Image (cartoon, chains in turn red, blue, cyan, orange):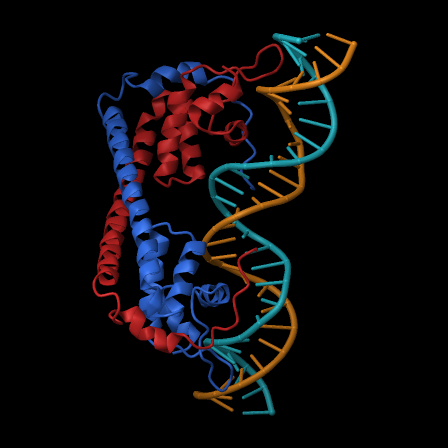
Amino acid sequence: MKIGELAKRAGLSAHTIRYYERIGLLPGAPRNASRQREYDASILVWIAFLGRLRTTGMPIRDMLRYAQLRERGSQTTEDRRLILEQHRTNVRARLAELHDCLAVLDTKIAGYSGLNTVEKDNDAARDHQTRHIRETLARPLKG
Amino acid sequence: MKIGELAKRAGLSAHTIRYYERIGLLPGAPRNASRQREYDASILVWIAFLGRLRTTGMPIRDMLRYAQLRERGSQTTEDRRLILEQHRTNVRARLAELHDCLAVLDTKIAGYSGLNTVEKDNDAARDHQTRHIRETLARPLKG
DNA sequence: CTACAGGTTAGAGTGCGCTCTAAGTCAACA
DNA sequence: TGTTGACTTAGAGCGCACTCTAACCTGTAG
């Protein structure tokens, strides 16, 4: 398949696929007679896995380390395992953190959902203090 | 307290605090005789909450909407609640997604941990296909 | 008086991960 | 034969969230 179809199937833009190849996340694709990239469907599995790494917040430079090991073949499985284990630890930490934050959100929302005519929470009480100098409306970040 | 101490206590840089004020996330702090910002400890609660929003991936422009409602006082609790509920939905989705990915990681790691002399997983099998054209080492992203 | 720590501002720079542009090539179809 | 539409490249641009710089000011300790 050519890059357009791969893009559709992988859920990436053709631009992004070329970018991934350029930085080394994807192996250089074989070309047809017109110098166009010709992909094997198996690349989809790798792209999907990269998607998992991205979704879990792995920086591209780490994916790159992994990708480079992968291209060196089966002698690097140990190193790859280590990378993934380290990453799994990070993901678990992130999960725990999000879980915590979720509890805070729940509490906050519960506060808002309780009585809604009375000034009932910290914010409302503090609004009297903080609502003062703020006439100057901040320059929005780049527009 | 002055900005340096607030920075320490809040775990942000003074630069970031001024930036947050500039864009409107933090209310304009009252100044002392030397035009230096003088903070009340109560700001720490608000900063901590902003930290939760950031940690859970809320974009600054949304925090800004929330902050602006907050400064308008108790008449906006309903709107704020809606924002937080929407955000909570996103966070839950994100948690589920991470959970999924974690399972994939576990599987992959288990694969690597099994037999480690044999070509045993998809990657190893496919290495023969993909390890070819890649001598050209990609230009690293900006250095 | 001097040195120094820490504050002030406007505005420039950074790192990340794309995302797009311009100018060109190529294959297929009316 | 033209005209789509998908592809090619190098390289510029973007949005986000900071992060830092330069030049200046102020309060305090030695």
